[in-house]
Amino acid sequence: MRDFPEDKVQAPLQGGFDPSKCPVRMVLAHIAAKWTILILLELKARPQRFNALARAVPDISKRMLTQSLRELERDGLASRKVYGTKPPSVEYSLTDLGIGLMQHLDQLAGWASEKQEVIAEARQRFDAA
Image 1 (cartoon, rainbow, N blue to C red):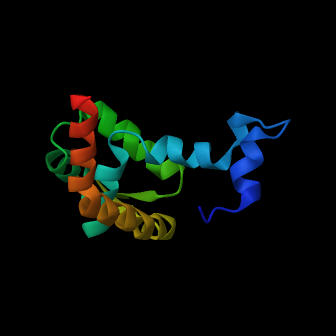
Image 2: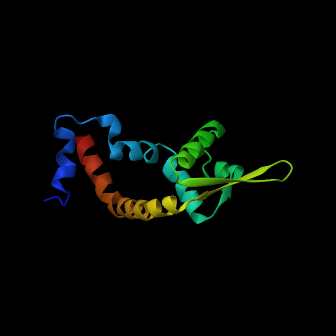
Protein backbone atom coordinates (compact mmCIF):
# COMPACT_ATOMS: atom_id res chain seq x y z
CA MET A 1 0.00 0.00 0.00
CA ARG A 2 1.30 3.43 -0.88
CA ASP A 3 1.49 6.19 1.68
CA PHE A 4 0.31 8.98 -0.63
CA PRO A 5 -2.58 11.17 0.49
CA GLU A 6 -5.64 10.06 -1.48
CA ASP A 7 -6.63 13.59 -2.45
CA LYS A 8 -3.22 14.18 -4.05
CA VAL A 9 -3.22 10.88 -5.94
CA GLN A 10 -6.74 11.20 -7.33
CA ALA A 11 -6.69 14.94 -8.04
CA PRO A 12 -5.62 14.51 -11.68
CA LEU A 13 -8.52 12.10 -12.26
CA GLN A 14 -11.19 14.46 -10.94
CA GLY A 15 -13.14 16.70 -13.29
CA GLY A 16 -11.84 20.18 -13.82
CA PHE A 17 -8.18 19.28 -13.41
CA ASP A 18 -5.93 21.71 -15.29
CA PRO A 19 -2.54 20.07 -15.97
CA SER A 20 -0.96 23.44 -16.76
CA LYS A 21 -1.52 24.49 -13.14
CA CYS A 22 -0.33 21.26 -11.53
CA PRO A 23 2.33 22.17 -8.92
CA VAL A 24 4.15 18.87 -9.38
CA ARG A 25 4.46 19.39 -13.12
CA MET A 26 5.48 23.02 -12.71
CA VAL A 27 8.33 22.16 -10.34
CA LEU A 28 9.49 18.89 -11.88
CA ALA A 29 9.53 20.29 -15.41
CA HIS A 30 12.70 22.21 -14.56
CA ILE A 31 14.21 19.92 -11.94
CA ALA A 32 13.89 16.83 -14.12
CA ALA A 33 15.50 18.53 -17.12
CA LYS A 34 18.60 16.83 -18.47
CA TRP A 35 21.24 19.12 -16.88
CA THR A 36 19.52 20.63 -13.85
CA ILE A 37 20.41 18.00 -11.26
CA LEU A 38 24.03 17.87 -12.37
CA ILE A 39 24.29 21.65 -12.04
CA LEU A 40 22.60 21.59 -8.64
CA LEU A 41 25.00 18.90 -7.43
CA GLU A 42 27.94 21.07 -8.46
CA LEU A 43 26.48 24.12 -6.73
CA LYS A 44 25.83 22.06 -3.61
CA ALA A 45 29.56 21.67 -3.10
CA ARG A 46 30.26 25.42 -3.26
CA PRO A 47 29.42 28.57 -5.20
CA GLN A 48 30.90 28.37 -8.67
CA ARG A 49 31.68 30.57 -11.61
CA PHE A 50 30.23 29.85 -15.02
CA ASN A 51 33.40 28.35 -16.52
CA ALA A 52 33.93 26.11 -13.50
CA LEU A 53 30.41 24.77 -13.97
CA ALA A 54 31.06 24.27 -17.68
CA ARG A 55 34.18 22.23 -16.85
CA ALA A 56 32.35 20.21 -14.18
CA VAL A 57 29.56 19.29 -16.61
CA PRO A 58 31.61 18.93 -19.81
CA ASP A 59 28.85 17.62 -22.10
CA ILE A 60 26.67 20.72 -21.68
CA SER A 61 26.88 23.52 -24.20
CA LYS A 62 27.46 27.07 -22.97
CA ARG A 63 24.05 28.04 -24.31
CA MET A 64 22.31 25.22 -22.42
CA LEU A 65 24.27 25.98 -19.25
CA THR A 66 23.21 29.61 -19.49
CA GLN A 67 19.58 28.63 -20.05
CA SER A 68 19.62 26.11 -17.20
CA LEU A 69 21.18 28.60 -14.78
CA ARG A 70 18.57 31.21 -15.74
CA GLU A 71 15.77 28.73 -15.08
CA LEU A 72 17.28 27.80 -11.70
CA GLU A 73 17.57 31.48 -10.88
CA ARG A 74 14.00 32.15 -12.04
CA ASP A 75 12.71 29.30 -9.87
CA GLY A 76 14.57 30.71 -6.87
CA LEU A 77 16.87 27.68 -6.54
CA ALA A 78 20.10 29.45 -7.49
CA SER A 79 21.37 32.99 -7.19
CA ARG A 80 23.74 34.92 -9.41
CA LYS A 81 26.26 37.40 -8.03
CA VAL A 82 28.14 39.75 -10.35
CA TYR A 83 31.52 41.06 -9.25
CA GLY A 84 32.70 44.43 -10.55
CA THR A 85 36.00 43.15 -11.89
CA LYS A 86 37.27 43.70 -15.42
CA PRO A 87 36.02 41.65 -17.11
CA PRO A 88 33.02 41.15 -14.77
CA SER A 89 32.91 37.76 -13.11
CA VAL A 90 29.74 35.97 -12.12
CA GLU A 91 29.29 33.41 -9.38
CA TYR A 92 26.34 31.08 -8.91
CA SER A 93 25.24 29.52 -5.64
CA LEU A 94 22.29 27.70 -4.15
CA THR A 95 19.63 29.70 -2.38
CA ASP A 96 17.97 28.47 0.81
CA LEU A 97 15.24 27.00 -1.39
CA GLY A 98 17.87 25.20 -3.47
CA ILE A 99 19.56 23.85 -0.35
CA GLY A 100 16.20 22.52 0.81
CA LEU A 101 15.69 20.81 -2.53
CA MET A 102 19.11 19.17 -2.29
CA GLN A 103 18.06 17.31 0.84
CA HIS A 104 15.41 15.55 -1.26
CA LEU A 105 17.69 15.05 -4.26
CA ASP A 106 20.29 13.49 -1.96
CA GLN A 107 17.65 10.95 -0.89
CA LEU A 108 16.82 10.22 -4.52
CA ALA A 109 20.50 9.86 -5.41
CA GLY A 110 20.99 7.50 -2.46
CA TRP A 111 18.03 5.41 -3.56
CA ALA A 112 19.32 5.28 -7.15
CA SER A 113 22.75 4.20 -5.96
CA GLU A 114 21.26 1.57 -3.66
CA LYS A 115 18.93 0.16 -6.34
CA GLN A 116 21.27 0.45 -9.33
CA GLU A 117 21.97 -3.28 -9.54
CA VAL A 118 18.31 -4.24 -9.06
CA ILE A 119 17.31 -1.88 -11.86
CA ALA A 120 20.08 -3.20 -14.13
CA GLU A 121 18.85 -6.77 -13.53
CA ALA A 122 15.25 -5.74 -14.27
CA ARG A 123 16.39 -4.14 -17.52
CA GLN A 124 18.26 -7.28 -18.53
CA ARG A 125 15.19 -9.44 -17.81
CA PHE A 126 12.99 -7.08 -19.81
CA ASP A 127 15.40 -6.91 -22.74
CA ALA A 128 15.74 -10.71 -22.80
CA ALA A 129 11.96 -11.24 -22.93
